[in-house]
Image 1 (cartoon, one colour):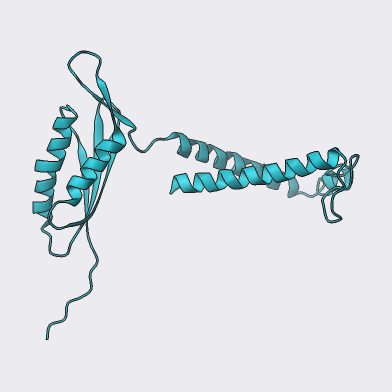
Image 2 (cartoon, helix red, strand yellow):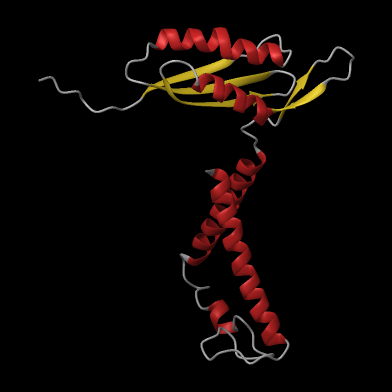
Length: 192
């Protein structure tokens, strides 16, 4: 979801900047703007002296300006931190025995874990995400179980089969995993 929000916000900000910048450039180059536009011609300013100093003497003006700017800075820093943080592991370092190692795409291992966990008996939906570092990865697995599924049996199958195969195929000593089980919603059954 963060990726979608990021793209939408970047797209909107880019569109606004291109439209405003292009219109100011066009007016500066001599194109006559429409009557409703914010400035009239080449030598017109975007913000007049009266517009800039209108609220200067009001007691609430500077605290409001500082609060809005501080909020904008905090939101920009939060956005930057959210974009730079990688919740998924992009690659896993596999020890090949020659000292070099090989890189395994994290998405490929996630897809295999998801497919194998989804194939377990009683699992309606599965999702696996790799976390941690590429030398010491971990996994988060979310399973949605059918109403008739036995959670203990499903968890045993996941750890004994899917996670063990993933750990062995990647040549890892351990693969710490957090598993979250959720029951699928179902309608009540009627007894006649």
